[in-house]
Length: 256
Length: 211
Image (tube, helix red, strand yellow):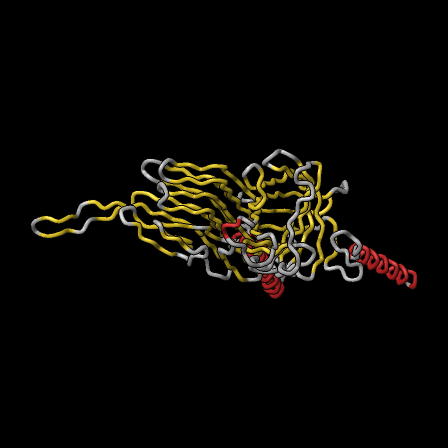
């Protein structure tokens, strides 16, 4: 629809030039208003509402995940449904022969989104996992208990995430006792095996409209050295290759 | 004109009386201080939701974690959503609860509760739950034994972050027998909340007044 169409319709009864001009102006104004209205409607349909922005919390947690050439799997696993709510799973015993074992493992994920009183996104996501009697690689790493939490929230234009509630009980790595409140992203080398990252935390988001965190309490990276060695002409360094990983106690949450 | 004014006055008086009646229920088991209760039960079946999960370290349910090897802690996820009253007068409420008490052992395993139905929700008015609080519950099953119980939770959002600020507790009553009366002991102090509501040491509760 154009403004001319309006003018032609209005002026078709043989009105004077002045009147026609006036009618054209009125029609042009009306047409513009309708144009803006249509444009406005198009924009409002094209842009997500505050509610839509707020309805995307995600959360998931798991007890043990093994990914090696000989075995792979995750248990227990909880993933927050797309529409929000609560998911939970548990495993009285987790055992991957020679690689990982744990007892009384639980995983939960919950959260939802909405619009706050001020009209800004208002959403929260929390996930957690707990395990007992953890044993990796036939006693190379042991722990009486592992608790992991990931929490994310956005409210009144502030988005944040944290790992509060996470804890390790009597963790021993390669014969060395580790404090229960180990610093985030503590890495320990395991000669001949690879390395382990404790309380591994990865943050995301802008802190205003989005925020997220992934926490892996024990992240064991398995590596092998290939090539290298010493000969008559000297020594060549080997090449480190990652062959697998085992994660114990993982929680992820995010809001936007 | 005067009739209209009188009618408006009577309506306003009635509304004020209803608000006062709904907010002032001091002589209940959870608010025994008749002169100055620490929280009141407010609107029944409000259009609201509460979501998230958390960790409690009870006993004693304060903001600090217990020693990690003690297993004296609880973890949970809980989600409740209400659309207000249905046309038939029932409350349009739904949700779910997962509860694990790592300190309470049943045949060597942590006590594990899972909700089957949410049947009621009401607003909880508390000074120390500045973003909102709900009292809700229904029926759950003890997964260790299969026994069923009625339950109620006291659910408090005291701002962000939830750790060391928000509050939660659960109370079970029959028909099951082995956990009848189960609740956490969270005196104040060390809990920052009143009336045996425990303080979260991890996680977050978030109250949404509209949805």
